Length: 416
Image 1 (cartoon, helix red, strand yellow):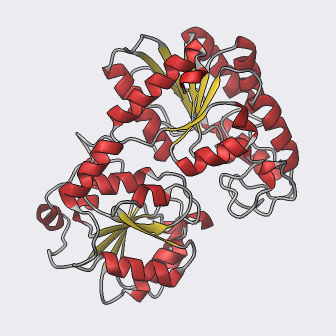
Image 2 (tube, rainbow, N blue to C red):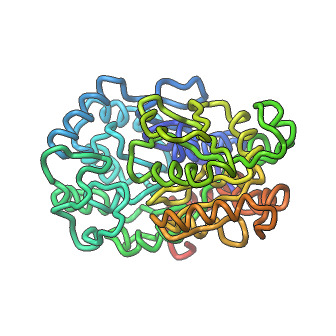
Image 3 (cartoon, helix red, strand yellow):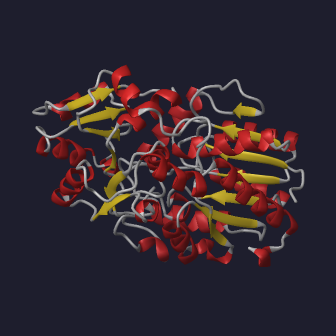
């Protein structure tokens, strides 16, 4: 039985990017079910949607980003914006605050958690990366300092970047102090990989559970007619088409070099379509003739059509959690090739794709070559889409979250 309650989600963005889409899916499904659902977010402009509030402005973001990059303290600014958020929390008086990604130059961690801890508000916190328990990084790669305390960070130039100073040891200690006060918290991650790491971190005192990401497999991400989609966008039925999402390719973690080299290696075998291409990255396309670079789109139906027309979707990220873009592609019937990092092997198990050693260019290219061949042994089309509908629907995800909401409110942790 689902009990009525007020749920307030907090994230950097709303319906823009992986974690933001998850927050939007949860919000909309809760509203459909008659719950009092709210979202507060910091970046991306105002959204005309019920009970969705942006509490930051551009000046807040720019000033915080500048100070964070110069001084090296991320999550220590944005006092005015965080005051607005706290006023909103007081006005809504939620039964549960559901936290998502808190980094992104939009929050003051100390102010928010001092308030949440003092008010004893039950919190569910979904980790979409490792930032909450690491000094500053989004992903720790090979580094294991975070298990006992950070400092002398080997990835200080990765997002969230610090240009001059290393305060990762200080931030790790302050996070531990702020984030682990009180007992009414539950940690959720989308992958078993991240859940296990959360249990090893200072969050191990709390219940740490896995709820796989869910997507809209009914109205948006489902297999479209492949031939019709290809005709619509000017591709022939016999072409081999490889699809990737190119957003954020200046971040080394995204692995742009691997997909571009793969395109060169398969120059006479396939075309590579990259959606979300930014003009500032045009220099990467030198000496390539088979890459089709397209701008980002917020049209989910268009994106689903591209997923459906492709022979394979590629995810060359060197660090990943449980990518929603992979779920979207598979929900449209297209298998995935990616690196075996984070939760990617979990996603691609059972014939849904191929995961190869991270950073192994030859293995990556050969896996793509195999995947676009006729006899590749991978699930595809309706058969693949059924697996995603079964395991990764929005309805399944929200049902699991509602159980967690009820348990954290009642403090009945034993049932977790």
